[in-house]
Image (cartoon, rainbow, N blue to C red; front, side):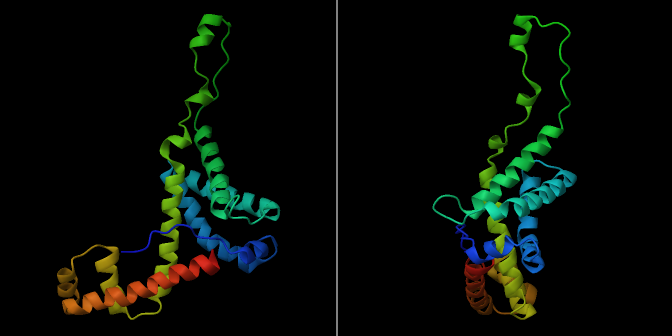
Length: 210
């Protein structure tokens, strides 16, 4: 089984480098990791493709603007939570934009006004879709994708196919062995060896990239 630890401590040195908005390499690294994370989060929160693109762009812009103010202190607020808040606010904005402005009534009868619901209150509550859980899921998926890409570059194609079918896609060992022309023992051995590499890359990501 793949680890589900989502603590993902953010490396302070990377945050320091990102505070320099002219550091192109660091921002490209940041965009490559967190852009898909933010976009996937927005889509699962109910945004359309276009809205998710806007959420991603606006969140990235906000991160660039506010990172100089950010102080890395995991005990008070982790970078993961900080970025979640930036993304959640942009998702909420996109959902609110869908609603037309409510026309003001010609007369202001008190009893009638008491039964009206402000149009802004009819926007789906983002907390209702458990955005933090969605964010955690996207966070783990981002780590797994990054780590998998690194491991895939380290092993031969056959070993990666075995691991992908057995562990990531959930095939039975005998099905994998039959499909790829190997014995079942080799399937188990490959799972162990490639899985160990994947766990190591996940730890490396947590310690260096993120």
